[in-house]
Image (cartoon, rainbow, N blue to C red; front, side, top):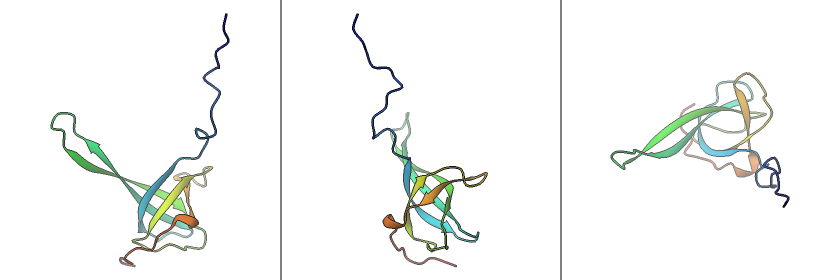
Length: 100
């Protein structure tokens, strides 16, 4: 009988935290930014692609980002009831400024 590895064994790539690229849409809260993440979805019947968006609350210590900036958010431990992501400062790109 041959030994097969169990499904619980994971590679280092599987253990990497989840990350998304999005645009900052709101910075009104202390140490928090609202980031909109867009993804393309294909309609099964008509084969047309359209955009679906979701907003995430991300931890931003010191309020360093501005509305319109493109940022990468990385999954982290739960910081509050709705905040489970943190902004990666190394991968932040200044945007058009926006309002605020």
